[in-house]
Image 1: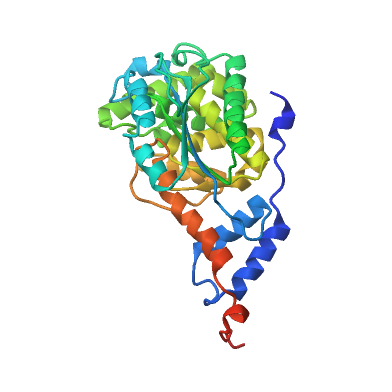
Image 2: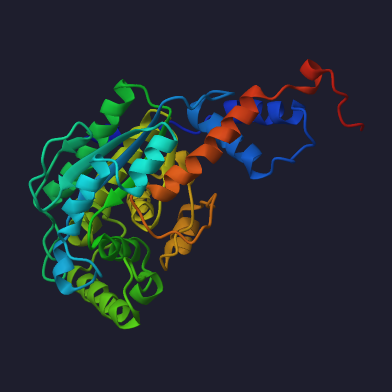
Length: 349
């Protein structure tokens, strides 16, 4: 992938300043809409529009399997990945419901599911391999495959942009992917595994301890360094994590705001930021997951979550739940009257 793909336009401070000035003129006490005002200003700076409109909304779910699932790091078997992809595209999963609820397009990308899936209009097949290899015993993927996973994410988002895209919601599916995400977060920061690894799909404490040991052993084998983000993805990552990172980079390059979901999408954001730090300006943390380590991962990116509902589902569900809040911030900013327009007396000096 050419380095030009990582060229992220700078945050538009002029648009943000103009949006902040508009906020001061709207018919409300200054600051009375709290973080929604800050969010509106951020959206202006991201999009370069003083009053951005979020009409075209897309949910992209990246799906892949993980060789490390063979180590018993999940409460569910690997075949659940393919089964849930079918549930996504047929409308029965949480993210399917939330995509309908928010009037968003839903695209599910098979970037590495260990099964052949029946064709469906919502399914995009860009399979790199039938799952990664077991990172405990060797690299999860080749460096070429790591680059390809990023390229898939870029290509899928470029297609969405050609259809019209104002805001992007990202999610994932892959049994074993909290293990890969935790390993990547540790590799990119130097944090110890015990501080980051959580219960995933519902492990008990003994299961979590085993998962910590697997992540620690994989990191000891691979010795990945934050100076080589592609090496981190190659050694201990997942195809869907690379795809999500590529999607973020492509969206940011077109000034499209990105709503991050939970633990796995945040690990992908850490990878994207390691490759192109400017991408952080285009990321909105939708919520704080119940998964251990997520809060410190968000802090590493300088992001404060909009919601904290104790979620740990994934799929993009938390990001889709936050989408109406983001839309509300944009509409309040654009559609409220100013004091002058409404003939309302402004605050006295």
